[in-house]
Length: 128
Length: 198
Image (cartoon, rainbow over all chains, first blue to last red; front, top):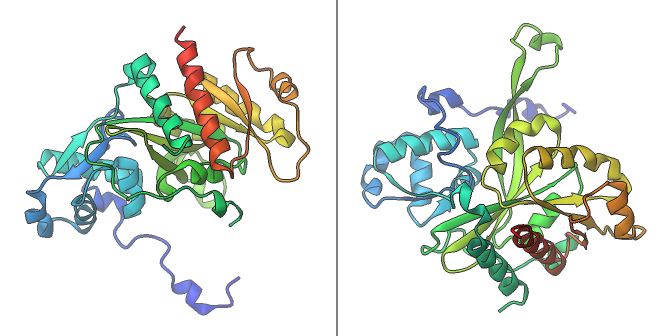
């Protein structure tokens, strides 16, 4: 398996450890920055982007063009979800992002919501 | 890839700016049951992957033996997206079913509308731990029996009986490679959620 010497030179971990990226901050509460929380960059964030750490800059660059869920931010930046949530909490404190929370948990039994979901799926299935 | 013929048209990476409400469902099942293929069949974007860190009890091997009894593992998880209307988006998360991923389920199941449990009829016994998890987290669910290529067709009533499912739980055939069949499974789930409201 190790015939190719270049294998040994391949990096198996990021150059910057995750605890450095997180700057010692802890994870936000579970109910904040969930997988389906939607985020975009504030216009003012673009002016400060050069002062940010590389990971935060990557997130703001990505979010400069529109809304994405937290899970999508993690996937596109290839950062672990926990790191992304910590970065986003910091960015919200610094007024760099807009946050749209997912539908509250209590509303998942709301017939109007479920009916809207059903109609959306049926419309997609029929290609309307 | 075999299922590319069914691949839906992909949308922009970004959400429609008017989308203000997001909901999610989970697609669960044992290893290699077809969760990733399923997500590829329904998602409007290229399926994506997150890396999630979970803490689990460590095995007492070698260099781990001197660490405390917890270790951190990274789990990759697939997901996709469907924009349902001007202001509503649905995320579909493929969730691994092993008991040791329970911690991940806590975050993912919170607020989830329900779950689609994918089943391989030739490996039914592997579905029991999944059903235990789905029930432990109080998720309403439907069962989709993946109709793999060239497999014997299993009557749904037999699957239902073998899994000892409650009578009201819908069990359907689902070809995870096929967009229509996969969409139908989601529709069955949401209809079930609506009917359970009474």
